Length: 120
View 1 (cartoon, rainbow, N blue to C red):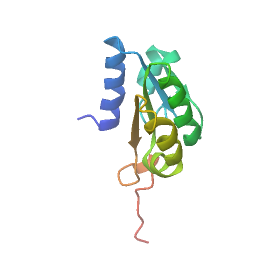
View 2 (view 1 turned 90 degrees about the vertical axis):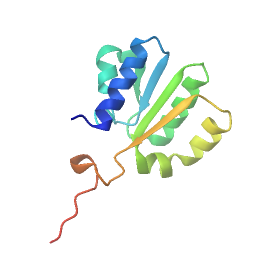
View 3 (view 1 turned 180 degrees about the vertical axis):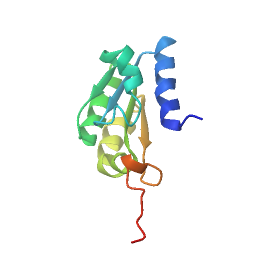
View 4 (view 1 turned 180 degrees about the horizontal axis):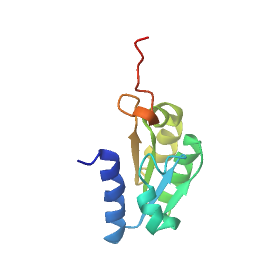
């Protein structure tokens, strides 16, 4: 049985193989958000901005303004809290074609997120 992150990575790659003009932007989350599937086949379609979610949203906005479909992928709490102003002002207001993908909210991330509670 697969997981949703693998399904996401596989779906993005499939859309590109179908001819969709997609660019993925991530904040040092290529492997955890499974964008490495796309990067292995099309390295020029994945932009890693490092641990900088606010910058990730600005890059996503810039790329989307050229007509491309952009998927911006990082951890849920950073997308929703850290980059909220950039999402509102530079993606939502101008109605840009950016899909914001948030994962590993901390409940099910295991080793990749805070989800292990100790009883000791």
